[in-house]
Length: 284
Image: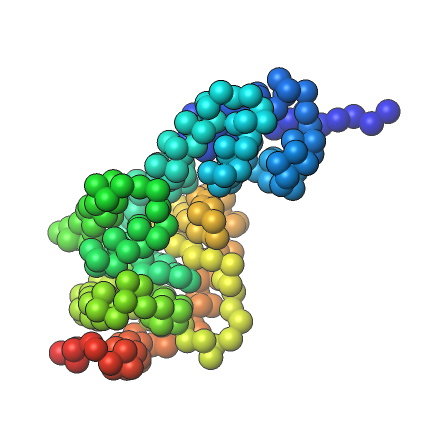
């Protein structure tokens, strides 16, 4: 006789995505369907239904509305989806923001964008507009203000060390157009002149590397163990506190750091990238 494993317990208080997942599971069970049967009716792969229920992923609005209709939720799932989309931060990100404010040092590898602590207002606004197109202009401005407020950590009397390795794609992708990108690159160069900020570029010619899957941040503290924050595709995030795993990710960062151009060479590389844009003013 095959024993069916008990479904994983869900915590609706973990995040809005988790609350959505709890509601979805209740509706599915009420309908008497397995995850596979529900997936076939949408249709999406049943593994996605599992991820929705666990709060690990959130369906698109189109899929959420289909789920609402098929499960007879009378708009409950659609209404909840609006809140999930409006406040997409995961529990891991909320934890990260608390630890970021207390860190003595932050070692970051960014695969796709400039880190929030070094973004200009216009660059941050464009990132938000593209990532959260369902928000109103006022809601976007609230989020931009919140992101800029995080930069205050670098203005403390004893600021943390911020060591950033940026993939070449971060420098090459013209977020918001040439004008916004010129200002952002100039801001990177200005920020890197501070004694507590180091910026390195990992060029494409470095080839395959240890963190092809996404971005990572290693946080160190004056007291207490190091932690790691991971960011992947689709908004997936995770806080890593297990010491063995933290050590492995720290080693991964060290390898990226070794592959990247030196801070001095990186500054020259960024200046050259500005020249290639053509409309940037020379950095002085």
